[in-house]
Length: 331
Image (tube, rainbow, N blue to C red; front, side, top):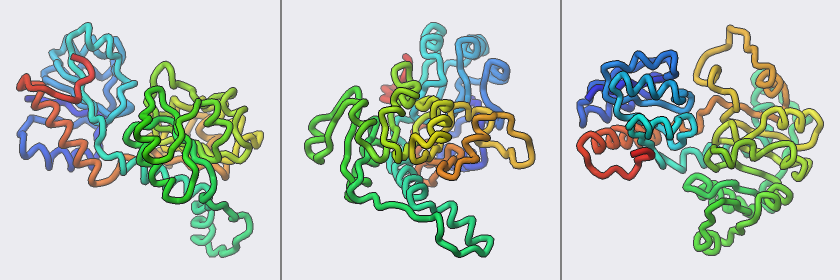
């Protein structure tokens, strides 16, 4: 088995090399992203392994199929960056890692919430320069506030449980509600409009698709409390960034903590510290004192990396042995 890995970093190589001792697949790591422009590099490989910012559109998948690629392996849970219809038309199977470590994302989500509500980044920067004043650092308690969780998959559920432990009231919204789970935990399923209007914290954990793209937009923001905090550790396209910038600029919301960004493909996972960032929207977001942006790092723990590698290579093994694979997206 020959597998081409794209958009890889040292932590990817370390975790996959460790797990691959069991499988002995022939792996080639590339640090560039897989797109239609780079797809010919997959010639001679049986499978490609990709991450969140690789772009497998119709053209890319056609080239992959012509190169002999039979399997697309997503080392993540989301698959919004893959044209599934094109993959099916070219008889290229697609597998993913649906739940590598829900706790990893959930814990990071809560970390972002604590950081932004208690102004921890500002305090850190001050004390590093010898400034130990407290003016402007007043936060607020989470206990008694209402958290709105959009999407109650494994990650959203973990976030709901953790925030409940802080004494927060929990509202949840999902196209496919689990009433037994919500009743058992005293969480209330409500409409999106009700959640937006009544939450002090809104945390996004739904998949990105045609129905959820820009679920946070000018209209939904207009329903929100003026001091609401929006947390996004899901996908950047869940938020209409221009509407978010307008809301921040005009004090329509209290703040935002983002581990993902709508146009992150070019910048995230790369060092731009000595280069010019020409994305004016991203630059504007970085100027707000009530915004935290991190570079899609919520998944990055040793435990999650190991599970991603284990599940990904197990998926490959099952597909090419014609065994049942529970994580297949396209047959």
